[in-house]
Image (tube, rainbow, N blue to C red; front, side, top):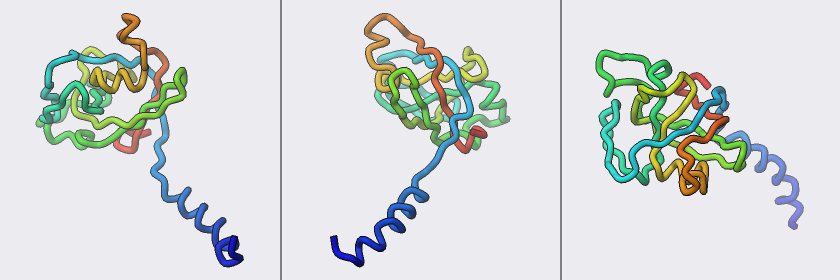
Length: 139
């Protein structure tokens, strides 16, 4: 390795690490999914397909704005960590989950299969102990 590269490599690595987006996974709850084969128009007004990486948050977290299409959480991303599978995924907030407990999240079937591979095929439509968060939701 040339001496000039050797001396700048630690600084370059530090810069790259500090440039990565960070997310605090402030919440832990159950992961469920919604209808499999139907495009959905969520409370944010976006149409999403079963293969999109989208999420609905509880009404307690989404709130009840006068016009839900203008909710500042809509269109923002959260990180979702499955400690059982050691996988991290990103999802766009597109809906409110009226039936979710405060820290539970509801995702498309495609994203559910990424986060909890094999669970749906085994008849499991819920994965417990999923961690998630993002800047738009306070964590």
